[in-house]
Amino acid sequence: MYDQSTALLSEVMGGNIHLGYWRSDEDHAPVEQATDTLTDMVAERLALTPGLRVLDIGCGSGKPAVRIAGLHDVHVTGVTISAQQAAVAGARPEAGENSGQAAFRQADGMDLPFADVTFDRIYAIESFLHMSDRAKAIAEAARVLRPGGVLVTANPYQQGELNAREAEIVAANRRLFRIPPLGDADDYVAHMDKAGLEVVEVLDIGENVRRSHALAAAAVRQARGTFDDAFAEQLSEAADIIERFGAVPQIGYGIIVARKP
Ligand code: SAH
Image 1 (cartoon, helix red, strand yellow):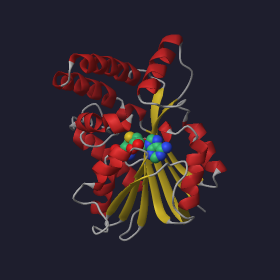
Image 2: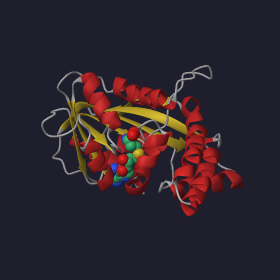
Image 3: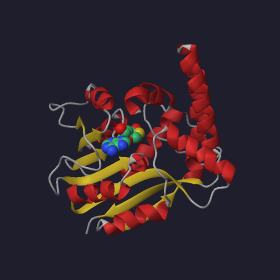
Image 4: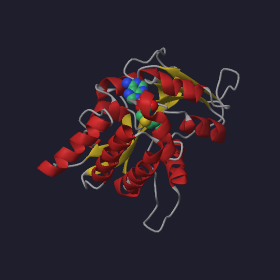
């Protein structure tokens, strides 16, 4: 799915492929700034110091990784299941073996190609939600993290029961973005416990990010004109699904921070 949609998704989300954060209704930051703010909120919780080795699980087109590497002078390795994303991210001027700052490769978050205790810090922005075996993905992160290291993850989740109409909307969104059952904050915390991590913060920012869905839907509708009729029609449907999903009140969003003892 991301092999095909990365260019469009990055365009509608300001280069990042994640939701934006707005402080309040009066915060009118453009989507590019709001999505960078979310990256910065994740980075803040990583307690970075120069030279640390950082893993980005599900790195998208690499924008968060190069931002974090550049602002904090750390070495970020980004992995993504999408070969196309790995190529796009690797082509960034800040990327590559010689940059010493950000490097990208295709790999599966549920089966990381790294030795135990390889990284000082790990983050995963809107990637665990896609993984069919989330427990395995979090256990893999715990395995490659060093003792004393920190894992920060940000994901949409579902808090509470859905009525039939809401369930249909959520199911449509899950089909569109290839998402297994969303789970709630407690599910993530349970996976972390089981992986031997200590959860130190669960921050629900559902209302701060909610605007993202409607803005993304509007941007997708705007982009329709550049495609042929059949694809434009699919984009209209996708935009409707995205907008309705964002309006389901039980859809929350959490940043979860855990430490490896
Ligand atoms: N973190 C990026 C991209 C988020 S989009 C950003 O914030 O901009 C979701 C990402 O998860 C994509 O890069 C997708 O390829 C990745 N992903 C989904 N399943 C994965 C898996 N099993 N292993 C590695 N990456 C995965």
